[in-house]
Amino acid sequence: MFVSAHADSVFAEDVDTTVTYKEGTYYGAGITDDARGLAAMLSIVRAFTTNKLSIKGKIIFGATVGEEGVGDLRGVKAFFDQHTEVDGFISIDAVSPTEIIYLGTGSYRYEVTISGPGGHSFGAFGTPSAIHVAAKAAAKLTEYDVTDVPKTTFNIGSIQGGTSPTAIAEFARMTIDLRSNGNLQLQAIDDYLHQALATAINEESMRAPLGKLTYTVTKIGDRPVGTQSTDAPIVHVAEMATKSLDLTPKLAGPASTDANHPIHIGVPALTLGAGGEAGAAHTLNEWYRPTNSYLGPQRVLYTILGLVGTHETESLLPRRLAK
Image 1 (cartoon, rainbow, N blue to C red):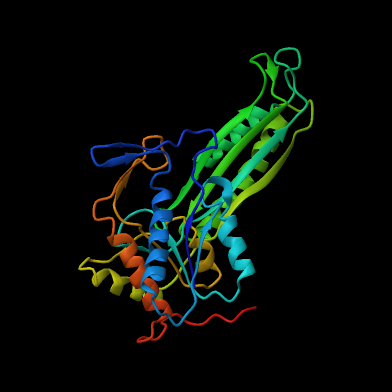
Image 2 (image 1 turned 180 degrees about the vertical axis):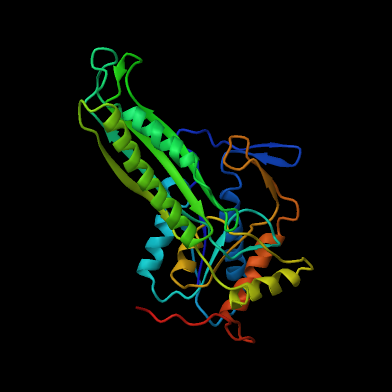
């Protein structure tokens, strides 16, 4: 099986990630997501090496990239493309020692580029505007009737374009994020977005026919919806590992993590917390407090041992035949 934490953070390279400490709490961009996960994973590796733990299955420990932002899970996707024999996966992310994330929220992310001839805002009036198209398409997307169950969302993250108030925009760009916990719902809102863009182009072309508009839609993110049963052996093992620490396991709702991809391709996978307390994730004020932090890696370790088997127990992971 593969056990990992992600090495990337949501922040750009020029962001100051210096860690400060005050009254029992560590502050720093990325201190929890996922620096804490990496630290927890390394403590598990140390437990295996220093205690010479005997196991029946094989474990690969590693750090992935591309979990955040527009990374499109490229690290974990590449790993499973190259290791088709690996039969289980645990992502160490967030901090809760009781929550078990066994479902994945799917998402499509797009960059939409719109181009036109442009011109003077008064003298060339009647020429179509790239920004007008972006505004029309954005307005149509915000009218979409999303479902609460399974939860489905949309977000227009950025709109750029144009040069001045007196120039008809030759260029506009939008970035869009569509998410859902259901495959059918994700596909439905995706179809709606493409229809909204085509309609916006057509409406602007009819309003201002003195020129031609073009547009491109580039998919920059494709995180599959991940579904597996609550009766899956990997879920039961995590529940037992949680109970062995006198904690009450909680099956958490879907989330978007590295586990999405393996679940989608049929590999049992979970995301488990690294222990401690945390807050303000994805902000410059992110903080971590190591209260009972040992519970996180301890539960992950117990879960691993239950799944791969020891000299006294059998592996509880179904074998995956290499392709």
